[in-house]
Image (cartoon, helix red, strand yellow):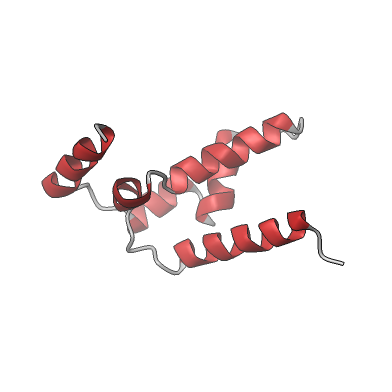
Length: 95
């Protein structure tokens, strides 16, 4: 029998796979549209580990989400934010 935790884990893996297959979607765009991004997911992952006394580093949490070291992902897939993105992000912060 499948438990809710197994379903949640499967859905989470699907989300990570979807984000991995759509690297062109920038974190700032996710923040503008959804109010969270890959970095948020890594922080939630780290917090979940800490709540369960499971020791991982911030870098390990990021790598679990990004599928590679964050510095490598950032270099390969994250161009600087545009003025338009920054303006939209600033606008969202006031909602």
